[in-house]
Length: 397
Ligand code: ATP
Ligand code: MG
Image 1 (cartoon, protein in one colour):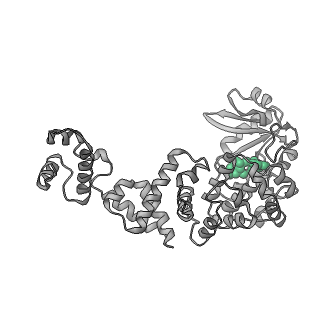
Image 2 (cartoon, rainbow, N blue to C red):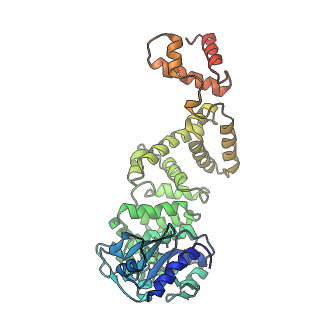
Image 3 (spheres, helix red, strand yellow):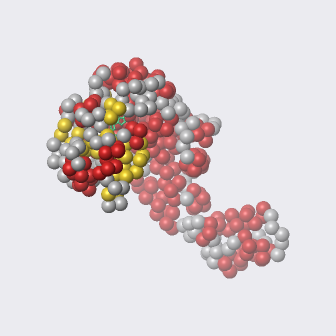
């Protein structure tokens, strides 16, 4: 057993000592069996939240109605969820309330895909009633039980299936694939936040091209809020090497392909954070300039390193070129800039006002901008007295 299971082992042992069952479940077991990096472990137990609280002195209620609490141990938090069944599904959504049960297999049965329905005990032995290991070996995504029923119970699973394709490069089992097509329209009933969290993972996955093909073929794309709901955006993406692009870069690429007149509005429909929307709209503007001409020192400076790297990466993908060496060039050129931020300029607006002995006005900002350009182009050193002399020689004051 290795980390992060190792540090969660005492939690399982404490639960067992109190007379209940406890297993590792879900994504961590799947990723462990696939030999992938594991982020957080989920623990499933026959103990109810109240029983868990009697065992552990420090817990946090995160989703107690659904049976989930966080156990704090040595300053680290572990998600522990009581075995449950989800009987009453309303409106194709996750149920409002759940029933706690004492049998592990009942809990595994309510999980979405067979590869996600494997439990592992503290010795590494597996409980795998739906042959999830075979699914992992065959690289197949298959619902636990009837695909039709499972997607109707909770239509978010439609998105989850496609995001696992993107992350793992697995194919869909034929019945599961057919059911996605039939029930695609149910995605409309799902809260945007839940769709978004799967979308982010889809956009970050290395096999997003395969995922986009499924979105297109099943018609699921039509029920997304914007951008990736455009057939052309998805189809065009397939012609480019998008596998290495991350989520942020994918939003920028989608904005570029969609050619929308209201980029901010499109991103707002996904409820992206305002700060991210602003950064992406600005990046799109730099991308347009990049298409027209190569970076100048002034452009690099105004964009900032992160935005310039984002823009250059997407630009090179649009050019069908691997971006690495170009991104390195951006970083090298940025390192060489005489100033990297406005506050590094040796003069301020106040200096200019004193030197000019004149009332302020738009001229201050304009002159500062000219000085920044001159410093970046190497026409003058970033030194207060040299800049003062340069201004006089140019007749700017
Ligand atoms: P990740 O590695 O992205 O966290 P994950 O499989 O762990 O992937 P989670 O959303 O963390 O995904 O869910 C944990 C587990 O809970 C899943 O592996 C699955 O067993 C179950 N699960 C999550 N969402 C659903 C759902 N909508 N329907 C049924 N089971 C689900
Ligand atoms: Mg998880």
